[in-house]
Image (cartoon, one colour):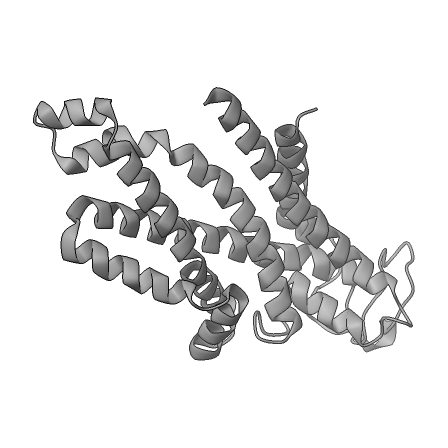
Length: 264
């Protein structure tokens, strides 16, 4: 089985579990149940409970919705920002190109995680704020990719022939140049989604991402940290699901890249 199929199957399984799982669980992932604090894994609580008596499996499944939604939304945002800005820079050239390039270069001057921390500190913690911070921090990479590939495609003979026939620069970019490197952006997007999953988990683990009591994989792991030696299984569920989701997206990215290389 190819890496694309493995990654797609594993990602589909995790997404389906996050979407459907919370509806099937009999336990509330947010409401405390102090009578069931620190319960060991059992038929009633498969991964035990945390310090407030909340079912760890229910919180892991419900947290998957939040973490996956942030990762997907931030990936789409960073792709749109980089794509639009890159095409505008190449299309208009001149001063617009210089200004946009220098602006994104300024963002690239910051280490990635440090930039995310700075944006989260400015915007505040929360689902939408974390999504926006990740999207802005990831956009310079896509801007540079789009700008480089678009400039390269505009220099090819078929594009020059289209320009000689009177095609506008916007038409050349959107109809001819963009379809030839959109696959590269798809490969990068899958890898970016995996990175965003881990960065969001890191932020929530540090208490800077999704605020409690809303569960995400990061803050569920943070809750488990305080009683890790007493109940190591509480970190096992969200930790394995997070690692599996990131691995699935990397498999998907690598498989798409291999197919793109063979087609090229």
